[in-house]
Length: 219
Image (tube, rainbow, N blue to C red; front, side):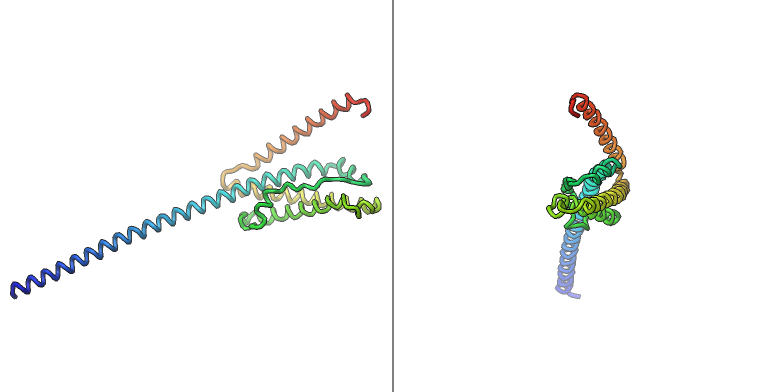
């Protein structure tokens, strides 16, 4: 084996080793880049998931508050005294509740809501929409020309829908609170606090009215 041949073999091996090292270096570098990209994509996915979960939870809390407010208003409207008063009116008058801004913000993308609450939430707002439509009809000139018996029939239908709305609201509030509880939020406590505030407000107003009646000789 000549010296030239040995030198050629060594040179070839050197070239192969250098090429292998180059390929290995490229592979390790690209693998590191791929792992980095995968890690970044996974981190971004987790951030997106966390942001969506937080948005869903925020919407659940906001809907709970909005429906609870409507529910408490319904409870005041559906006392026996208020029902008798409404049925006794020849020209009943009421203002529709158009303050459901939370549901209005999500109704075009209802899938943002968690599946366990969609049914009861939609059912509640559908009933609320129906009661608003009838409430607006109380101002309609055609309604005002109806007989007292026909007016009472409309009012009775409205009261029945308000009762249905109240029942659906209670179901929706319960479903929303149960969903939030899985994330450590106690919406039931918020409900109890809201009920207590409304009750205190009602008692305070009753006292104010009593004082006003005592001071007003014409009352």
